[in-house]
Length: 201
Image 1 (cartoon, helix red, strand yellow):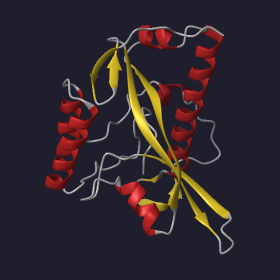
Image 2: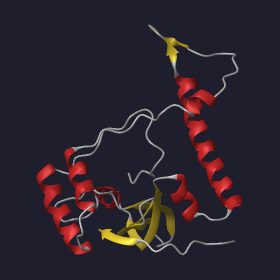
Image 3: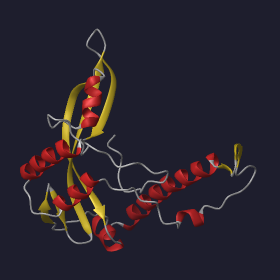
Image 4: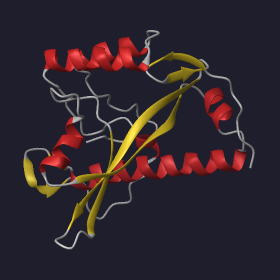
């Protein structure tokens, strides 16, 4: 299968971009919980969240450590965001693979839309489903513009910093200072979040 050799330009915080395609370096940890014999009972992998505690530890990792989990491994991944069809073609030059990825995304969106429909109720009557015994075409829902999450002040500043030519260390230091100032605030979630990231929580 063909792969892309696109030359991306550095933009700070481990990010690179070509205009229609953005590459970002993200850190993941797997935490494990051990039994009395020292054997692994549970594994929990999480991407590092932007919200940090006063010591600079991601708050989602901190929660796992508070629950008795210990770090099993840590790796960095290069993840991609496409800003256009051209960027998608640049990232995935093989047409069959593009169709596979598009269908996977469609499946995700359609499942989310169907779940929303299944839990809606009649206006003024929370005990009666809005839809029952019907066949619902999801085409209009697929084409409906997604509701976007409201960014917190911290996230707005973080987005600005990512556009600056900062080193990874400079970015981490700035974010540590900002997290203390803003208290690790989080953006409120909406019923229909953008299908653009996997939650780090």
